[in-house]
Length: 224
Image (cartoon, one colour):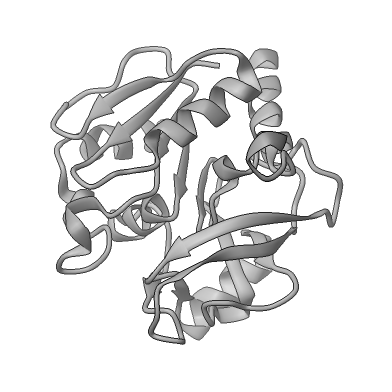
């Protein structure tokens, strides 16, 4: 699997994501600074990792969404490339117009750093093919703006088209509409996910319950 991770000022989860991708595929991803204007040829996957790009000033992800590299990411997605955004990466995807809706302040108005439970709503995507239908697994969340919001029409569209890929399973920690934790694009090639699966790929650091996500990605691209 040939993957690239985009690094913005304030990104802090790129190394965790690199380890998770390597755990799934055995191949180290390439790190790309946000000032680059093009992506390496032959990429299977582009990842926007977590952190606090630009200190979350203005709105979380709003400034990063206007970085030079994002034009190349939009072009990559428009050509059918696969893009994964986790936490701040999810926020950037909504600010860049690659996914609908927005991530608002948590309903508690407090930063949350805790484990949560996720339910896999679809297994017919490259991101979830490694899970059993309806699987639930623990993941870590760490965010102040994870409350997914969209208007009623958009929520109906997401539900009707089966674009809710992950949902909070045992509680709804940040107040997200419909307990949404992750959504995808219409072609199911761009995924935004709020909790951090990259934190859950090694038994020595709390468990490997999210490893099927990264192994599934590698297997899908090996077959393509």
